[in-house]
Image 1 (cartoon, helix red, strand yellow):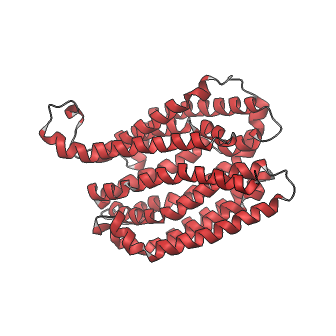
Image 2 (spheres, rainbow, N blue to C red; image 1 turned 60 degrees about the vertical axis):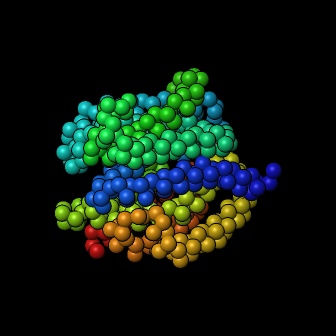
Length: 394
């Protein structure tokens, strides 16, 4: 099959695996904005911003390193086993330390204790499926990848609807029913985390076969080489995540306490409307990363890379224009509560930023396939410094 045709076929499936779950999660936006006040949604958004940062820390670049070494001149079973054992050890260590320090974390972050516990459980479960998902992509099994991703979101969405709509409407008058003991008034944010926790646990169960058939041999020399490759990816990932989500955390700390969470809630809800560009860019990235690594040694790969970037720019421009033109319609469709609409002015800026980020991901292939990931770290750090500096200045 022609390499580009194969790429677009995989991108279509990965796109389905990425777009459909996130579109399902997008359906949670009208649910959350309808059930939660702006301050409640702001609190959720701040916690999920910390989620994003810790997801990067717990992965520490191992996913990208896995692709690089799995497609290199190394024993594939050794790469899988070493990667799994590395993440298994660090995740267990994080779990133990975080639970022991949960009181201090709660005081420092001003986040209620029960949310901290849920966050620790979810982060640990999500970290344990990083290598299994990477293995599916590296072995070009996009269909199985897509099915598991979609099932995760279906479970999450179903539980959110169950907890946030069914419970308040039915359980108040039926406290003696089977589910009556579970219902607690004003417990919506906890129910959101419980839904995420169950969905993450379900996903790990589906991924257990890779753990069960793993030979559990740890190659220290290989691990050191992988970590030398991975640490700049980690730095770049942290810097990139700061660019993506740290604005919510900064807003909470820079705005007056009385309105901070409410303003973060409005901003975060309108920010979600840029999801269409994010979905497109993510689906493209999921398809091209394995393609880039597997074709790095082919004749004149730069030509294929340039073609891919051209396609992205054309299609991305169309999506960006469509979202900006129909923004007023989209806010009515997805953000039911008019209290959130004050922040609609950020939508064009956010979607343009997502478009540029997608282009950056296509151009960043050079330092990944040439093992010069430190340049990615430098670039991302500069971007993070600019982001934080401008936020504090203005």
